[in-house]
Length: 159
Image 1: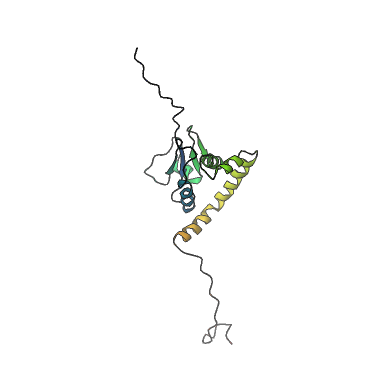
Image 2 (image 1 turned 120 degrees about the horizontal axis):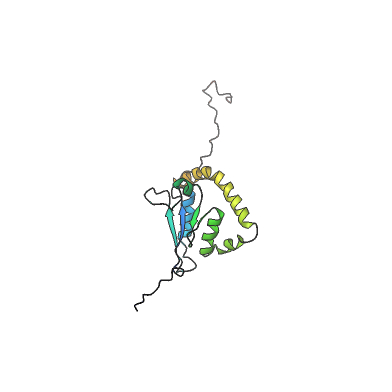
């Protein structure tokens, strides 16, 4: 009788996959922070996929618009998480963020985090415009004070 070794699929965990909007300057900044960290468990990698890249395939049953609208993570078990649950899964895997994942387990905390994230999503377009200006090196220019022109008869501030 010939036997072959059986691969234990459960022990070979899939990576935690972060699906983010690489066209969003806020998202790029945040993902840059996470990418700089080594996962807490070396055998449990974290992968990052820019879903704004139209050449990449998407997880089954999703659309690009759906994935770009909210933060998503595909768990090691294959489950697609979004919003606060996705952040909690990512934070649990990274050093320096695990405390926040633990805080999310407190009854009601994940609910508050999700509501806060939804509020952020309302402000996201405005914040993105602000971040783009910062990326380009632009700062809001202060208004110059009005200096009356004595030669202009229509300038009501003239002496």
